[in-house]
Length: 109
Length: 115
Image (cartoon, helix red, strand yellow):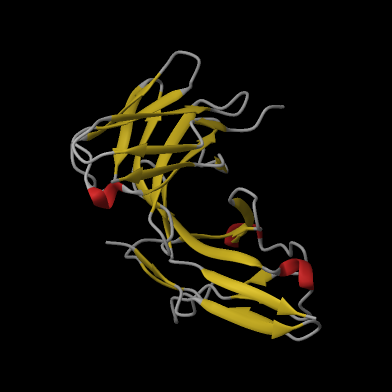
């Protein structure tokens, strides 16, 4: 069965510092991985997907199949990046999402 | 373009009761997925509906059931409520059917409390 692990429930960094949110997965097939973000009082929304290989709001994530990881990175954190971040894997007949438990990122001034 | 809407926003029920939650999909979306998010956890897949039929189900008992209507809106029904059913229930819609694998857009959720 597939599983997504986000080892850090809470992460605090100072504005301008680099940030890395960790995500590890277990899945026997070829993974489709995503990062979702939920800002305060807003709904869950897609941040980026690994197949796009794009940078969104300065964030990037590289799929490392050897380490089964999909860490989210940003070189210079901004206060507006403070939010809950969820890593998710898509699989199954319904292409359903399996989420990690999330990491609450706080960017301090 | 109207986003995904859910009703009600909050709901309080007692153990053993039944509840119905509603979801209107985003305009043009024909696939609806339901997720349960317990406090401090990520969303967990319950089931998905496409063309008014259940298409995939997570590890939830049969007392969790659903419907999809011709206008693609959907209902989630939970019978014989248990305390552990207290959670935020999220609905997500997407277009193109399952094979398209298009982005899922989430609603704001319904907060269910079971006493």
